[in-house]
Image (cartoon, rainbow, N blue to C red; front, side, top):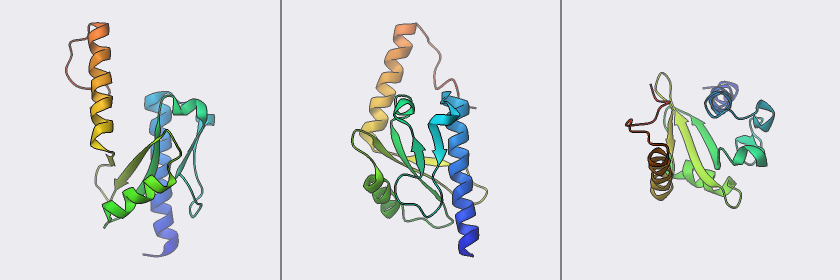
Length: 130
């Protein structure tokens, strides 16, 4: 695969993540943008204001073969203080997945379950899943 094609695939995933942050989390489009390909640092530029709703530092990989450990290490290396690293990855014609530390996932689920209890919601699962 040519370098330009590989970068286009990566940019497509970054743009998808930005769109989902805007559409699903209600983040202001001016608070989140895809970083140009080949730039150092986080793949998605997230404002301080948007970090309140998305406290993650995503590393996006759109590759057929991915070294998950090296990719997550890259996410960790690019993560600013007090933000959680997040690996977002996919390959052709497959769903997009996200990898984060188990403790982070469990904390998020505990907070989600607590908010359901406080609101009296009894439905199972996340309301925004298909």
